Amino acid sequence: MDGDALIIPQKRLMWILDRIKENLPWVKRVGAYANAKSIKMKSLDNLIELRKNGLGILYLGVESGDDDVLKKVRKGTSAGNLVDMGRKVKGADIKLSVTVLLGIAGRERSLQHARATGELLSAMDPNYVGALTVMLIPGTPLYEDYSNGSFDLPSERELLLELREMIANTNLTRGLFFSNHASNYLPVKARLPRGKQEALALIDGALVGDVALRDEWMRAL
Image 1 (cartoon, one colour):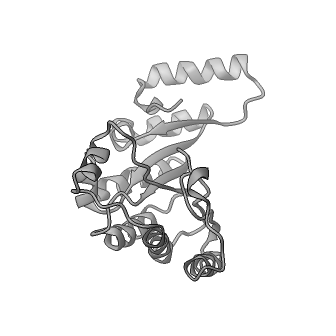
Image 2 (cartoon, helix red, strand yellow):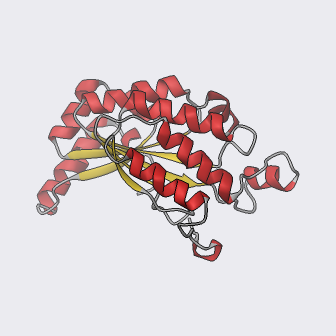
Image 3 (tube, helix red, strand yellow):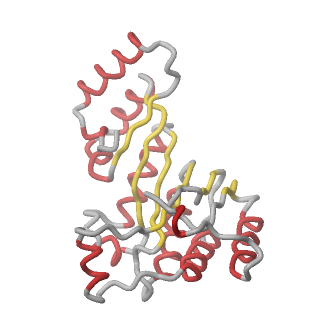
C-alpha cells in the first residue's frame, strides 16, 4: 500500500504478480510505490520482467528538484539520481507517476525549488505529475522547525506563485500535471504541453481573486 513495494526481492515480486493473475484475473494493471533506492536495485531487465508480468505503473516521490531541499528533508538521494531512476522506469516501458511537494522549501527557496523541480520533471518526462502541498503535523521535525521559526511556511499566494513557476518550467513530451489533491488550495489538471497556458491562466485568475481557492477547513492529507 503506502510502502515501497519495489524493494521486495525480484523472485518474491514475480510470485506476488503470479498470484494476482491466478486469483484476481480481472485485474488489468498492478501499481506500486517505489523510491530511487529500490529502482536502482533493480536492473532494467528486472523491471521489464515485472512489466511483462503485470506491473504497469510505479509511483515515485520526488518532492523537489532542488538538492538543498532534498538534503534538508533527508530524501537520501539527489535530483540527478532521481532523473536517472525515472528514466530507467520509462526505459522499461512502465508508466511513471511522480509526486512533488509545494511549500517544502519554505519561503526563502520557494521559487528556486519550483524552477528546479520543473527542470527535473522536464528531464525525467514522467507520464503523470501530482503536486501536493505541505501540511504541518504536530510531532514531526518540520513542525518543530516551524514552531521555533527556522521554517517559514509560504502563504496561499506564495504557494500559487510556486505552483505557477513549477508548471511554467515543466516541459513534458506528453503527460498530465495534477494539483487536485485535497492538500492543495487550487485544483489544476493540465495535459502538457498543450494545456500549459490554460493552467497558467487559471493560476493567474486565482492570484487576482477571480478563481476561488479551497477553504482551509477543506484541506486534508
